[in-house]
Length: 345
Image 1 (cartoon, rainbow, N blue to C red):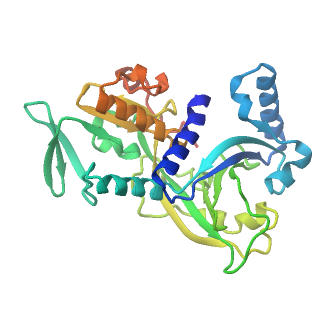
Image 2 (image 1 turned 180 degrees about the vertical axis):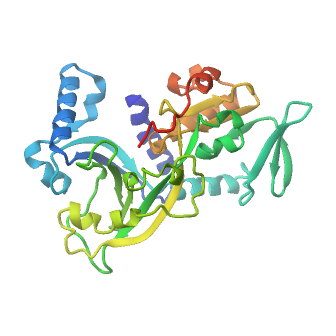
Image 3 (image 1 turned 45 degrees about the vertical axis):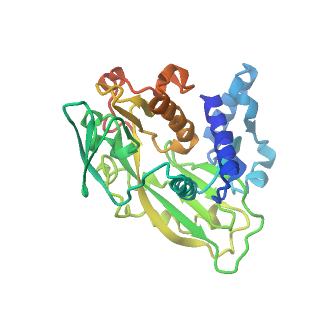
């Protein structure tokens, strides 16, 4: 799995360079920063034990020296940090530019603002795709619908569950240049107990994208669990992001940074925290899926899509795609795994 995620970084890099995409791609390191002393000791101990055991995944991971962890991460009160390879980019620009290039080559016919409402089968076994603008038929269909999958594949109800989450964009006051410039991505584990984690992605222009704050509204499950409506904000979260940079990062105290945009998105959770990739059980050879990324899709979805394309376009068996076996969409996973209400807070 560690190798698969590492390969993802360089696969995306190759495509960005080959296609000349302007999507703010950067090779970086990412810090998992721990602000709780007890948790920091536990994580550091686990890493050192894995290092001593010679586990391969530790090769590219670095435990930041506790003496310098605040200086290196720029985070106030940091007790420990793990540094791992990462890349960052603007996904919408990445995807939209790829699609634009394909359209110019007449390889793809892109129909936007055309929601699919239902999929049925005709007598020849082809899928009938019902949309707000009419129907069409296809020999093969791919569901790249993540948290919305159960709306079109009812067998995935309770298996891939929509979960609503928040992200924000924070900018320094106009004309303010913060020094030093943050050049790493972050997972920030706060000293508030398990699950109190934000992710943070600095942009080249000095703005910051931050997501998380789930614990603020987690007590009311109806707000986020099984919720596929991304048109409204979750209560109380913006207050968490307001002042976050000033509170936690050195050099940001006088930045005047504030939230200038905040939005919600829908993740797709699975019980085993792995995506479902491959043929839809019961619809083999006709319908395929790539969904259920549990909020961490950027670390694996590109190569998952490549493997699925080999299956759909070239008839390559799943076992020869290089995809992790645990990702395979199977009837057994549908029968044995269900997302249990209350399993996550």
